Amino acid sequence: YTSGEHFTNELINCLRSKTNYAFHEKYRNCDVLLVDDIQFIADKESTQEEFFHTFVALRDAGKQIVLTSDRPPKEMLTLQERLLTRFESGLIADITPPSLETRMAIVKRKADDLDIVLTDDVITFLADNIKRNVRQLEGAVKKIKAFRDVEGAKLNVATAKRAIADIINDKQPLPMTIENVINEVSRTFNVNPQDIRSNKRNANISHARQVAIYIINQITDLSLIAIGKEFGNKHYATVIYAIDVIKDKMENDISLKTTIDDIIKNIDEY
Image (cartoon, rainbow, N blue to C red):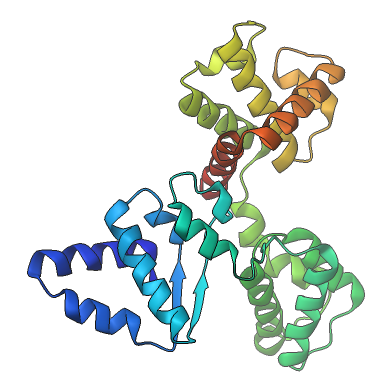
């Protein structure tokens, strides 16, 4: 197991110390190679060259290669064509946040593992409030069991609320989320945040504003009318238009889609 960044750094060190043979022995003679964040090598020619030969050596030997990235191969714009075709020749799985039904199943499975019985309302409450992180779901079930074992608490919704109180409190307040979106879009497109909220029609500003509207629509539960109010009381039809414009542009512009995905990822990490 390695990461794209570690593979690159290790290769650089081996080139400097002229220990290429040891590097080849390590990576070309394993049964399974797991590489996380493979997109890290996409703009590094020497690393791509080395990884190509590693990939071919393992494939020809019938070994297993598993790669993860934050985007599909075709959206790694600086990836060599020969690596792109080889990455796409395997099974590509898009791992998305679990649905409500899947989250409920995860809670129930964890409860079964811990030998506790949770009612449907408790399971639904947990699954409805923890949407993106499976580990947090499992941790919440462990907390509920701990409250029962240590304090004699009942396995009800009130106890579930206590179990996830710190998780809920960690969530960004909605105004902060909106502000972070606008600031991140402002930084990415080199546009003043105040201009994004304004009625200015300059092409660069309008594009940045449409991106901000699209992202807020994607990551919050705000209504179209409420989103419009954040951008100078714009009519909800204008909000719909902005969202549709960005959707259409993303279908034909992989670079824009990658940029928006990166902005959303940065917002999630705030």
